[in-house]
Image (cartoon, rainbow, N blue to C red; front, side, top):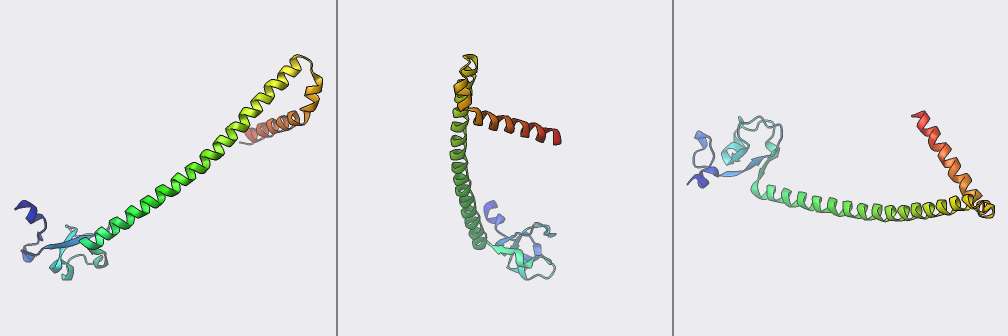
Amino acid sequence: MKQQNLFMCQQIAHEGEFIQGFCLNLGCQDLRSQFCLQCGIDPEKHTNCKKDLKGFGQIQGFITKFNQYILDLTNQLNKSYSSVKIKYEEFTKQLDNMKIQLVKISEGLSQQDYKQIQENLQMIKEWYQYSNNQNEIMKQN
């Protein structure tokens, strides 16, 4: 009996009327968001939001539409994640290679292998310039 009462209009003047749906307007000033046919045509009810009175079928349609929207967003997010993950792995590999090169150059310096340093001088200059640029950026901030 209580379950059945939930689907009946709570307005005394509309006793016996079945709830047809809900007002979906966030700013609705009516005390109850549910509506029956009488509430829908009552000029005193939902005065500024008649267009937002939606039946159960329409609400189900919105839910289905929003669910699809969430699925689409999830797919886009997964694609973005995959793309970022690939770039991350590529960049990590580059950094690992740079670390290996730095160790070799450092060993060359320790062993006074100036030929190896000469071969890697361009790279050392680029790293040096990068480091200076980073320091300048930090000073500006």
